[in-house]
Length: 198
Image 1 (cartoon, rainbow, N blue to C red):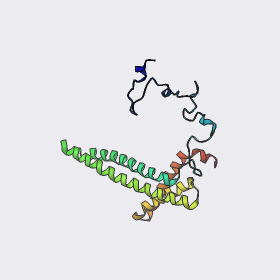
Image 2: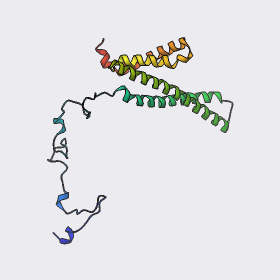
Image 3: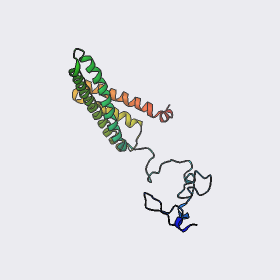
Image 4: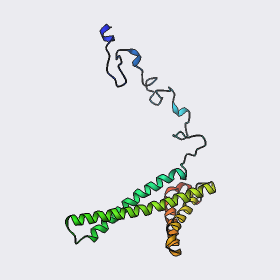
């Protein structure tokens, strides 16, 4: 080997290195054709947990997330969905209400309708989601079980509480609406668990 070639230094983001030096030529896999084997630990990870979960969970933790963990996702997703639905409704209403206007005045009016309706709907849906999540978490901790009954009860309570300031009949209608929406959610998300009761 040429002595000049052995002293040649190549550029790297992690500092200079010698591309001729053999100690840098480490194979990625321990043996040829062993794609499933980890290149760092030199063992097949399927051996440790062949039929179990693909996730690493702390000892004692369930594989399913609890209501407290899902609460923030539920509230945030509801606000985003409410804002989108309200913006669509505001756009439709703005287009209908401003037929007589033209030019920048109409554009500004439509934008006002979209912004106002989007914010109002997002606030309403976010408030309902907050009440639903808090009551669901409280019922879950109180019963010590997280099942479909908690979802139905918290949906009903969320409707009752949200409409409670509008009178008894309005609160009852809100509770029925909450029960119907929660029941629909249970039917969609828990088909497999409900089959054992039927």
